[in-house]
Amino acid sequence: MSDIKDLQVKEWILGLTKEHKIMLLENAIKDKNVMAHMALVKILVEAPLSQGGLPSDDIPRPDDPKFEKYFDEKEA
Image (cartoon, rainbow, N blue to C red; front, top):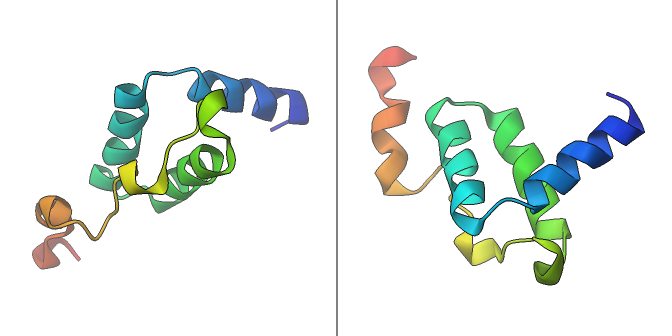
């Protein structure tokens, strides 16, 4: 992706509501898309809160028990 495209995506993500950002992070976890989750986390924790970043305490973590059902051992 070009630098301009990366910047546009980053600005779009940072412009979303807090709820939408959290939903995107949770969906990445549910889809087992580690790369998407890590990329979103990087954008959100590096940005100042005043510019759309999220506090690390608000970022859903894959090891949260509420996501256990998405990582059922039988699927591996």
